[in-house]
Amino acid sequence: MLEIFYNRRSTRKFLDKRIEEAKIKKLLTAALLSPSSMGSRPWEFIIVDDPALLSVLATSKPHGALLLKHATLAIIIAGDKTKSDVWIEDCSIASIFVQLEAEALGLGSCWVQINRRYYNDDITSNEYIHEHFNIPERLEVLSVIGIGYKAAQRPPLSDCDVLWNKVSKNRYQDQTSFEIPKECEE
Ligand SMILES: Cc1cc2nc3c(=O)[nH]c(=O)nc-3n(C[C@H](O)[C@H](O)[C@H](O)COP(=O)(O)O)c2cc1C
Image: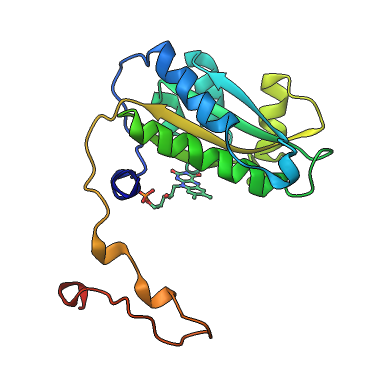
């Protein structure tokens, strides 16, 4: 499991290679198995592979969404706010489950944030996506995960990325036995 965690890096450049249906099914299986508060399962998922619709998603906000234009697949992750007051948490967990399963399947992915982002001064990214994808009012889009075969392999995270100074034992900032390796210190 940790190997997947070290290797998962955000992928924003993808090969022009289709993702097998069996892999798409596994990505959605991971999402549908994710835990949710009180087991309410407030999430719903829209898989998008139509290039014209991927281009629409890529313009859902001015910055940070363009990668979706070149992704082979995008998964829109939306939560039913009438089913759960913590739909954001539930959809976040589903989002990362999809990303980790993508890595396990040899695919790259990137989270594109939609909740609290804006298409322009007047329209939220959520409203923009609702408009183009016939999404009902009760659902709020949290994220869109762009997925595809990696065009380049990014270096994995290293032990220097494991910031042990963020961990306390018992009381805040009481020391733990875990240390940042010497070679990571500047
Ligand atoms: C909540 C969240 C929102 C993110 N939103 C975006 C985004 O809108 N566009 C983007 O390109 N990357 C986005 N990312 C990816 C982060 O930029 C990336 O995870 C971070 O820079 C660390 O890099 P790594 O994923 O390669 O380890 C998001 C990640 C998270 C967890």
